[in-house]
Amino acid sequence: MEFQDKVLVCRECGKEFLFSAGEQAFYAEKGFQHQPSRCKECRGARRSGGDRVPQGERQLFPAVCTACGKETQVPFKPTAGKPVYCRECYAKRGGRAGQGSSVVLEP
Image (spheres, helix red, strand yellow):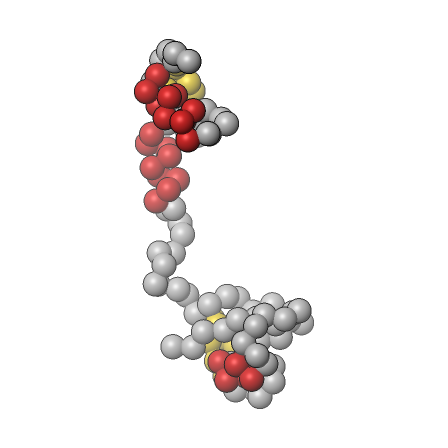
């Protein structure tokens, strides 16, 4: 199949961008079903995450272990009504996430 260059419109910024024949061939080779909907700049900005916290720099939230009452820290905001366990109690429970249990990390 022979591809021809296409001009597409970015759904983020509205700018026109070129979807080259080479890119189309690459997409077909990889089995991609859809053509890109964002320009190169917007794809790059989206990949960089902007507002996401980089891995390794997790925000920790204070919590109290449901089982033993020990103060701990977890990498998620605890939700009222859902149990949170310290590292030791989590391990005693078998270390697997059961119904309603939450994984915890301590520094």
